[in-house]
Image (cartoon, rainbow, N blue to C red; front, side):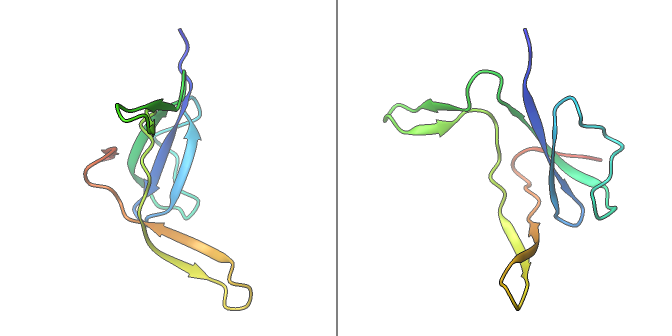
Amino acid sequence: MSYEGYVQLLCEEGHQTSYGVYDYDRDKLCRCGAKFVWRNSVDVTNNEWSQDEEGNMVRCDGYVALEVESYDRCECCNHVNEIVYKIPTDKGQRIE
């Protein structure tokens, strides 16, 4: 039986990164050089969606929608240069 998925990661600065489940290494650092402090495994082996009792489609893969804390935009073109996310305390797993 195979497992397919990826790992959602946040560094101590709030930058989001993801790696394939087999590419994730605890010793990797974020692109900014900071340590990762939060992770969440997303299982996409069989299906990402299912129906709830009311017939609504809901995610069933463990994905956590991250909340934006702040972002930096270019004044000229309005391009988002950097997004900083809040580190969840109720979902995923803190990395020590």
